[in-house]
Image (cartoon, rainbow, N blue to C red):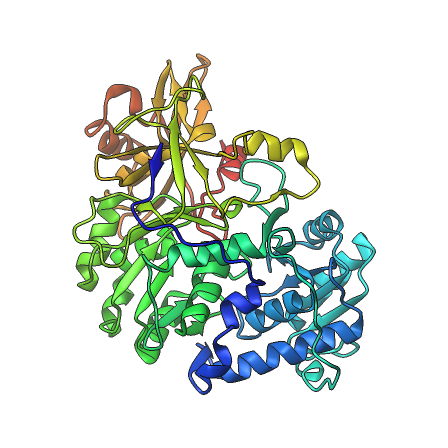
Length: 521
C-alpha cells in the first residue's frame, strides 16, 4: 500500500458554499471573477452577497433541500454564483454539458430527477425541449435575459430571508456531475459536501494560491476538473478567476496577456497548441508562473516542449477522476525536477494500491504496472440509483478501482500507462494507445493523433492510428506514419493501420472519444 507523504488533513465537514466562500466577505473588493471577454468583474464581497440573495430567491421560488437543480451553461461569471446559491438553498447541482442535445439533456433530467434548470438564453430552446421531454421541471431560470423566464439578475432583488438549511455534509450531495460516458452509459456521480470540500483541503498544500494569483478558466465548469481547479480551489484561497466561455487560441492568448494570468489549468490539446502553434509567439505570456495539465494523458516530450518554449518550469500534471471529487495526485508547484511524465504524488490523506491485472487480490510494488486503486475521504458516495455499478467500482474495503494502469517509482511518483479497457492486446502482448499517441505527436508533420485497437482479417487486435496532418505537411503518407512508429518501438507495438482525419474527437475535458473513432474504423 502506498500512502501520502503529506500530513493528513481533517475532513472538512462544512457545506461547500461555506468551505469555499466562508472568507469571501472579508476579502471585500478583491476581484473574485472577471469576464475575460468584456471585463465585467465580481468582487468577493459581491459574490458573497449575490449568492446569498439568489439562494433566498431560489428558496422563495420553492427550491427545497433534496431538490436537484440542473446548471446548463457555458463558463460565465454567473455560473459560480448560481452553483453556490443552489447549494445554500439545499439543492444538489447536476451540471450539464452546454452542447448536450435536448434528448441527452432530458435523459440527465430524468435520471437525476431535476426539478429546476438554470440556463442561458442561447441554450434556452434546448433546455425547454429537454424539460418537455423529461417532465417534472418546475421552472427554467436564465442567467441573462429571455422573455417569459425569470433571470438571475431579477432574482437578486429578492427581499426574502436567506434560507437556513440543515445540511449534513457527510451524507448530502452537493454536486451530481455525470461521468463522461466514454466507457459506458453516463452515470450520476454523487459527490457530497464533505468529499468535495475535503478534497480542496487535500490539494491546497501542493497547489497554494492567494490574492496575487490570477487563474484563467477555459476548461468547462460543468466538468469536475473545471469545478474544482477553476472555481472551488481558487475562490477558497482568494485568487482571481478570469473566465472564458470556450477555448479559442487567440482569445485565450490575448486573455493571458491582458489579465496578467499567473496560472493555467488545462488539458493536453491546449498544451499541444502552446507547444506547436505559431500564434503563441505573437503574445506576451511572461506573467505565467506555472501550467498544470490533467483530464487525459500528457506526453512527457510534449510537456517539455511547451515549458521550454514558454520559459516555464516543467508542465506539471495532476491525476484523478469525477468519482474522486476529483483529485488524488498532483505534481506540487514547488517540486524540483519531477521525473518527466509523472502525474504526481499522492495528496494528503489518500492511500493507493497497485493491483495485478490478472489477479486483483495481488498487490504490486515499486516499478510494477497494474490497476490503480484509491481509498480516501474524496471517494464518491456512489452512482445515483446504480448500486450494482457502485459495487463494481468500489470494493467492500472502500477501494475505488480506477480502471487506469500505472506504476510508482521509488520516490512515490505515479506514472499512468493507460486505461485497463483501452489496452490493445496484440497476440497476447499489451500495447498502450497513449504511448503510441505520444510517439506520433513527435512527428513534425502530425498535429494530433489517436490510437485504438481494431481487429484485422486474421482476427488479431492491432493498433489503428487516426492522424491529423499539420498544414505544413499535406502530403504526409500512411507509410511515413507507420515507419515513424516502427523505427521507435518493439515490433508488437507497431501501428498497422492509419486513417487521416480533420480532427480527433474529444470530450470537453480533453479525453479522446475512442468510441467515435471505432465507428470510423
